[in-house]
Length: 235
Image (cartoon, rainbow, N blue to C red):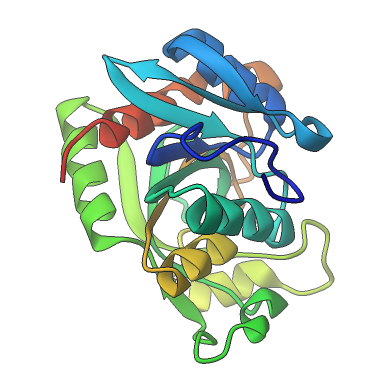
């Protein structure tokens, strides 16, 4: 056990699907996994392990923002022998041609988060996803006939800010903004693991289009299915 995860070694699968919201973790487990077992509930951050198409898969929430993602992904990678984490969540598109409810696969994240300043020699602005998982995600998305865009995204530490992040993102050709990818990719790089961010477009910051809470909940199933298919595919 760790300070934040009450599970034992072996309770988690080698691949963890990681939404931000603990209730979404519960929904994924109960909807998609056979025989899901609650393996962590410290601070209400629910983690489950079950089976998808006969293969062991885990799902656990990360909370919101780089600090909480940093804690949970580090502990899963370091202490519970997790090899891959696939983040699933919402993202604001920063490109007028990216439709609502489509998927964004984050090849790299750009961030000036202070999180990377705690890691010696890991202070680059761009942090890479696992090339293997990016390739696999694109392949599976095509097989599932899902609408997706692959590119670089902004990972912000602030939801409400005085900084013009949209203008910065447009200059750098960043196609979306979310809040957890930098810590996840940094931890994977540091610990020689694999990580990928797959997000559903909940709103478009250029066209000002938005989805309702019900639409967001229903449309998230595409990214969940994609993440699960990736999780059971052998390297």
